[in-house]
Image (tube, rainbow, N blue to C red; front, side, top):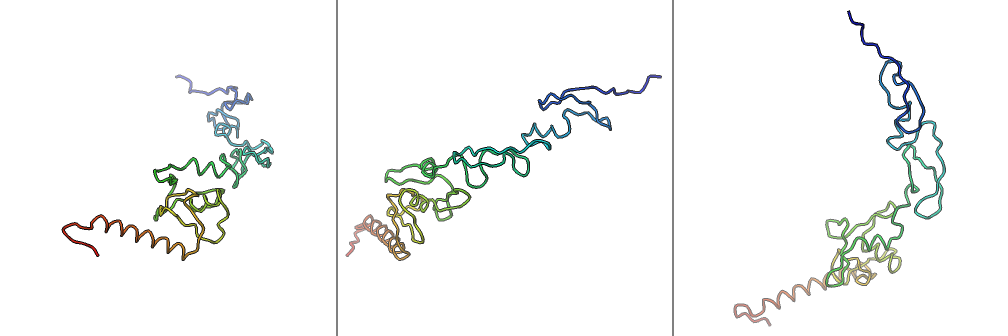
Amino acid sequence: MPLPFVKTQEIIKCKCGCGIEFEKYDKQWRSRKYIYGHGRRKRNTRLPNEENIIIKCECGCGEKFKKYDSQGRPRVYKTGSHSIIKNPKDIILNNIETNENGCWIWQGYKTEKGYGQIRFRNKTYLAHRFSYEVFKTSTSKKYVCHKCNNPNCINPEHLYLGSQADNIRDMGRFVSNETNEYLDKIKGIGGVQWV
């Protein structure tokens, strides 16, 4: 009668790259590839015994913080306020297309009404207000109105500060212009003369 299969303990090196030798099988004879805790290293997380070192933020601000977050994930930027693109002008200019009227058409997220939205340093802004603040001045509590009547335009030259009354007057001006253009197109059709 053949003998039952008997596993023999082997000494192998940890697969994480640390080079530490250990027994291949645990107490229940389950096969292992890593020393306890070293399997996390493959997923790029902090080991239980590993020191959480202090590093500098890579955005260039010079602030120092711990390399690993509370879940053991490595970080290169300080949480919350730092990103790869630091300059808000770069964010705007990387997300626009210019049309024949000189409008800067926002290519990012748009609201139901057609206004662009931008997220910067964990806050959400309307893109035209953000653009005006970046290229011109603070908008405080005023309205940022469009000269071009294009809600998707964020060109600071097409924007101006105004009140709610200015905004309503501005919208009325564009409605009447569109109506007048329409009437000019159909004027004289079918022998009808407009007075």
